[in-house]
Every structure is written in C-alpha cells, then in structure tokens.
Length: 631
Image (cartoon, rainbow, N blue to C red; front, side, top):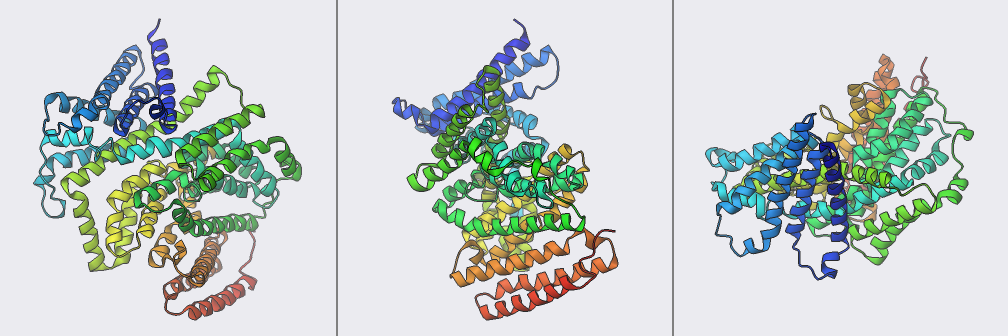
C-alpha cells in the first residue's frame, strides 16, 4: 500500500463527503432523522473537509514526504475545525471562559485555513486576510480613521474561530447552502450535456449570421453563466467550443477570447440567478427575491445589447460571414433529440417562482433532473471514474469559494470587532461630503475592483457588501442601487488588469495575447463601467418610479450605450477621420447619457434630447466616410 494510494483514497473520501454533506444539509436530512446540528457546526465541518481535500488537490511540493506532510495537515484541519463543530453549543453557554483548550485549536485552525487559501486562491486574497488579522491585533496602535478598538488576543482568536460574527457565520452559511446548490446544479448540467445543449441551441439560432459564433458565445454564456456562479468556470465550459468557432470565421484570437470573457462575466449580472448572488442580495437586504431580479433586468439587457452590437459592428467592418447552414445544428432536431435538457431550467423557474421552494432546494432538485435527463438521453454514463471526475470538478470550484468564505468571515469579523468598518464608512462618507458623490463613487469602484481580484462571484459580493456598501448608502444612495453598484465593480475585476482572471483564461484557450485580450474585454464591457453610476444617480433604471420614467431612463441609457459602441469600433482607430467619428459619437453619447439626470424635472426635455441626438447620429451614419470598410 503506497502513500500515493492512501492519498488518492483520502482525497476521494473527502470529495464525496463534502458533496454528500452539502446535499444532506440542503435536504434537511439531519432534521428528518431528529439529529440536532446547529448551522455553525455544519459550516465548520464543511470548512474542515474543504481544507483537508484542498491540501491533497494542491500539494505543497512533489515527493513522498510531501504526501505525508499534506495528509498530516489535512488531519490537523479536521481535528481543529472539527473541535469547534463538536463543542459549539456547549461553548455558547460558556463565553466568559477563554481557556487554552479553546484558543489554541483556534490558532491552528486559522493558520491551516490561510495555508489552504494560499494554495487554492493565490497570494492576493491570502495577503489581504493576513493584513486584516494583523490589524485585529495591532489596530489600536494606529491613529485617525484607522484606529481600532483594543481586543485581547484570546478574544480575537475565538471571535474568528467560534463566533457567528467570524468564520462560522452568515457568509459561510450562505456559501454552504445557496451557492453550493447552484454550483452543483451547474456542474450536473455540464456533466449531463446540458451546457453543450445550450451552446448547440445558440449555434442553431445565431451561427449562420455574420460574426455568428461570437453571438453564440454571448447567448450561451449569458444563460449558462447565470446558473454556474463562476465566470472562469463559464469561460472554460462554453469557451472551449465558441472561441475556436469564432477564430474559424475570421475573428482575431484576442477578440474571440475577449468576447467570451465579457459574455461569461455578464452572466453573473443576468437574472434570474445572477450566479446565486440574487439570493444573497435578497437575504442581506431582507427584500423579496423578485425585487432583486427585477432591478437587475434592465441593466443586464443594456449590457448585452451593447456587447451584441459591438460584435456585429466588428464583423461588419471586417467583412466576416457566419458559419454555413450545414455547419450548424438544426433547431428542430435539437429540440426533438435533446429537448429533455430544458427540463432542469424550466423546473428551476417553476420551483422557485410558482411553488416558492427555497432557492438551494430548487437548484438541487433541478440538478438531479439534469442528471436524469443525461441518463435518459445517454449523454451521461454513470461509472466510478465519471463520478470521481464529477466530484473533483465540483470541488475545484466549491473549495475555493468555501475557503474565501472563511477568509471573508475573518475580514468581516475584524471590521466589526475593531470598529474599522464604521471608520471606513465614515471616511468614505467624509470624502463624499467634501468632494461630491461622484468622486466617492469612483474611489469606491476602484477599491471594489482591487478587493474583488481573483474572487468567485458570491465571495466578491459578500466581502464588498460589508466593506463598501454602507458608505455608499450613507451618502443617500438607495440601498439596492448601492449593493448593485459594488457588485458590478467587484465583478469587473474579472476583466480588469492586472489580475483579469476571466480574460487570461480565455486568452489561454485562444492562444492570444493576455494583455490585448484584457483591454479588448474592457472595451467590449464598457457598459458595465458606466451603468452603475447611472442607476445610482437615477434608480428608475432599477424599476423604481413610474413607467414613463423607467422607459425614458432605459431608452436614454440604451441609445447612449449604442453610440459608445459605435464610437469604439476598431475601424475608428485607423485614421484621423475615424478619430473624428469617435469623438462625435462620444459627445452625443455624453449628451444623451446626461439626460438621465433630468428625468424627474423635465421628461419632455429628455424626449427632445433623444430625438435631436437620434437625427444627428443617423446623419453621421449616412455620411460616406462613416461607414468605410477595411481596406
């Protein structure tokens, strides 16, 4: 019996236990068996297994000694986090006692969490977590806005380790239930052939138009990305099909990769699931889920329409054609042969909106239906190797989210117990009062992009909602608009250098330049950089207000965005005339966009601006030099 064999068996056991435990918790199996388990104990156990599995999935180094080392670290993680899971209830009645039997396992547990975080999630989030921990111990030595309350070391460690305000708190609770459910559904759809089916459907509808594969990428990624809960996972699942097809029709590799990256990222902003974040926002703000979905709908439509138009203009300017009809699937045949793959999506909507079932249960049941559809259609074959591959795929996405959820618990814990969160809110509010809301929002957006680097979708929102949202709300911004603002900018870290994880993964598939892909993705995703400011200043875009106001704000934002899309055509960067065209379109876009601020005072004035700008834009389009082709 070799060490490698033991390591493999342990890894398989951990992965199976992680998924099985999550499924049992969502289905309320402990309650049905009359087993009393508090949420914090479940969370701690999930974190323990995630750390132990993570050490085996990401070994420290090669060699037999590394295997022993990683197995040992995993067992220590199980013991230390299992200790708080076992004793959590009894410790609740003994809060004054902070004996060594409590805080020493806590020190070990936190160190192991940080090491697993380093291996799986990189140095950015790891260093950030360490900085916050250090601040928790030393923050009382600072002055001004960064002066924190003095907290004894034992109390701080136990706050991280065994308090609902720390690691085993709300953040990890949502990750291990709602996020887990939708992640599992996305992986089951992918494994059963549902992801490929959505791509094929998009191909049958869009593939034969100019720039067809790029439009396929937009449609498929928006649908699957909303469910998957991972921009990078979406890029890797749909991008392996759409990026080669885009290159085949003549699109440059960097452009194909950028389209896939920005379309996949947009899926996280698109209702009805928004990468499970819609449920998090509803939970955090204690508002109906449908209100969140409704608010996110119009910005998502504008986002994708502008992206769609940019792709179409790129294809037009470069005389590109779509795929031949013989190269695309036939829609009718797809529905007849593989239509069962639609059942999970329909069932998800039915269970959540008609039955009113909890989101995690709805996602889990829809995932099981996806698996059943795959078995009936024989696109899925159950075997031990297939099951283990599936478990590993799930875990490679789930474990980083759980680890980051644990780290987010530490960060939020420091913000709360030291008072730093209140101080930051106060500082940003003072900046807003002194320099204006716009400056404060720009600064908040930059911070959100930095803090969101490399984080999964749900974790991005969870951290930013605690760190930045209160300051934006304090400036008088409507609460839902504030939360969507920080969520949009947090997700922009996926395409914004220097990290730009989604852009870099897509560039790797396309064999294209990483940096050119990233900057092209920024251009294609320009709507995401401006929309948050628009709905902060006028939340009619979030379905607040009369229908007249809502339609006007939607129209002005859409028209302004289309003008920006026309201004950013690559053909405009090739000559002086092109630059003049770009400036004209940009100025018109700014005029129309600024009209959103007048809605409450003069709706007729907005309509007049739209009409005049529309005529000017149409005149520019008709000018001979505006529509020149590539030579």
